[in-house]
Amino acid sequence: MKLNENEYYLITDSKLSKKGTLSDVENALKAGCKIIQYREKNKSTKDMIKEAKELKKKCGRKAIFLVNDRVDVALAVDSDGIHIGQDDIPFGIARRILGNEKIIGLTVHNLEEAVNAQEIGADYIGLSPIFETSTKNDAGTACGVEMIKKVREGVNLSIGWD
Amino acid sequence: MKLNENEYYLITDSKLSKKGTLSDVENALKAGCKIIQYREKNKSTKDMIKEAKELKKKCGRKAIFLVNDRVDVALAVDSDGIHIGQDDIPFGIARRILGNEKIIGLTVHNLEEAVNAQEIGADYIGLSPIFETSTKNDAGTACGVEMIKKVREGVNLSIGWD
Image (cartoon, rainbow over all chains, first blue to last red; front, side, top):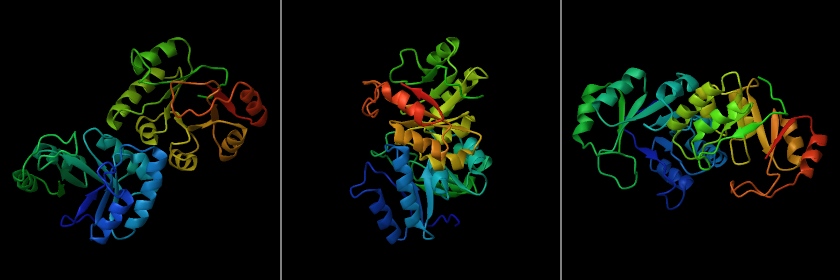
C-alpha cells in the first residue's frame, strides 16, 4: 500500500482515548482514514503486541498500519512500517533491522531536519507541531502553518502534520 | 559464549541503583560476574540503545550480555540474547525474530512452567522469586528454595534464581 498525502492519518493515544484504541481505530477506518499509527507508551510489550495484532487485522487492506518507535512490536505483527521521533530508535538502526520494504516515517520540526530525513531515506515526514499542543509534553515549539509551505518546497517527500 | 550455571548473573535496575547502571555493570564485571542482563523500563528507546551499546562494549568477551524484553534494543546492539518474563514479548515471536543463535531465557515460577520452557526451546530459565521481594512489584509469590531442587530434577536446563 502506497502513502498518499491527501489522506487522513490517525495517531492512537490510549491516554486521551475515551472508548479505547481499538474503538478509535474502528471509527477512524469507518470515516475513511487511510493510515493508522499505533502509539502506545504505557503497556507491557505483551499487551502491545496483542493490541497491535488486532489493529493490523482491522486495517486489513483498508489502511496502512504503522507502529510508533517499537521495532520489536512492528516485527512481531508484521506492520507496514514504523514512525519514529527524536527520542526513538535511530533511523539507520531501524532501517537496518526492518529493511527497505518497510515504511519508516520521521518526525521533523523544521526544513533542515526535513532535508536530512530525505537524505537518509525516510519514506515520509511528520511535521510537528504546527500548532501549540497541550496533549503531548515533548512536542516542542509550534512551528506554524508557514513551515508546511517551506518544507513542501524544500523536500520531495510526503508530509504529514498535526 | 556458553551459559554456565555456576556463575553470577547481574540484572540491572536503574531505579535501585545508586551510582548508575554503567557503574554497577563495571563493578559486577570486576567482581567476575559472567552474565549481565540489561533491564530498563523507564528510558526512551534512543537512550536504552545508547546505554546498551556501552554495556555490551564493557562486557566484551568477559560476560554474556542480554537485554530484558526489548528485542528491538537487542537487535540494535547485537546482544547475545534476551531475557523475557510473563508480560514481555511471547517466546515464539522472539525466537522467530532473533533466530536460533541467540540466547533466550525465560522467567518461570514453578515446575510446570519450567518444563514448558524446556519444551518450547528456552536456553535457560530464571526461577523467581525464591524469596519474598520488595524491589519488584510484579514478581509474584515467593516459591522457596525447595523449588530449585524440584525444578532441577524436572528439567535439563541451566537455572538461575533470585
